[in-house]
Amino acid sequence: MSITRLDLTGLKCPLPALKTRKALQSLRPGERLEVCCTDPLAVIDIPCLIRETGDRVEIVDRSDLAILFLIEKASGPLE
View 1: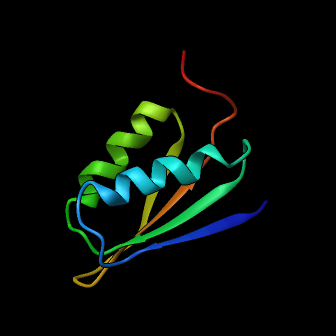
View 2: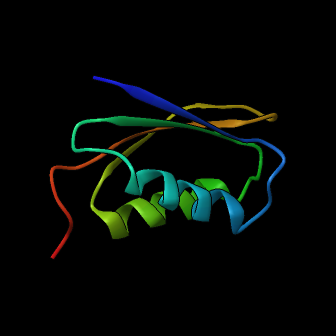
View 3: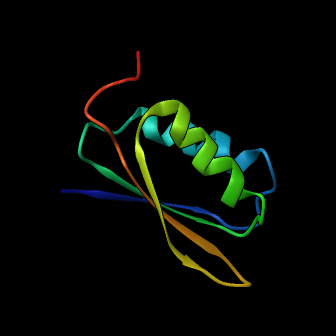
């Protein structure tokens, strides 16, 4: 299972969510996307995005400096 890493440190809302959405489009089902953000609003925006796409997300690490998400591409789009 491959993991694609996306470094979005320093970007402010809405760019982390927009760039995450774009990166997810190139993944195949079962592949994972690791996203590192520094924007505190990402803890709201990225999970909301993932609810829309039907993929799975987990916050693996959250500190004062950064938030690390692990997103797994679902088997198909939500209908």
